Length: 169
Image (cartoon, rainbow, N blue to C red; front, side, top):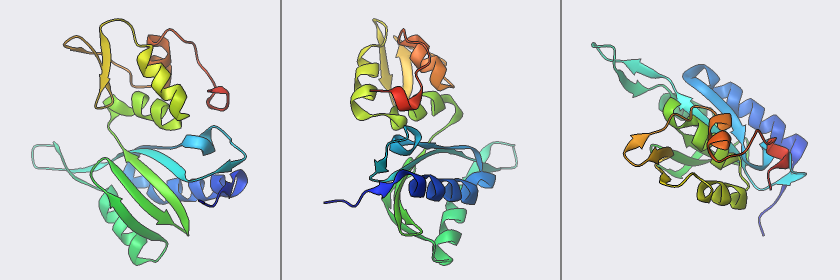
């Protein structure tokens, strides 16, 4: 059985992780059961938008997040596990961390879904207006991509008002 982490402890670790990456990210936020303030959590979930070095034309090139994660690994506070460009599993200061890497356009959907809980997120995506669907963390109305840069936009699109993360069921 997976060891559970007390909320206060998980919040402190999550905050230290966000502080360790925030200067190489446009945005970084705690999600999952820590954000929902559950008494114990299984892992720490973070959603972030990494900053990028720009190429000669001013377009985003190399992510600044990857070198930071590698530096934290060399310092012995982080152990990278499996994952790819959009998702990484790791251990930070001995605690399991899931890092979800997104873009500004996908922030609202990703933060909403990753805050959960899972059943809430599933029901939310089912409650999208007729003709809408979510694919790759973007909500499509037919061929049109809808703007949902914030959680409030996602909840409103689903016909809901703001629901505090701790009240999402």
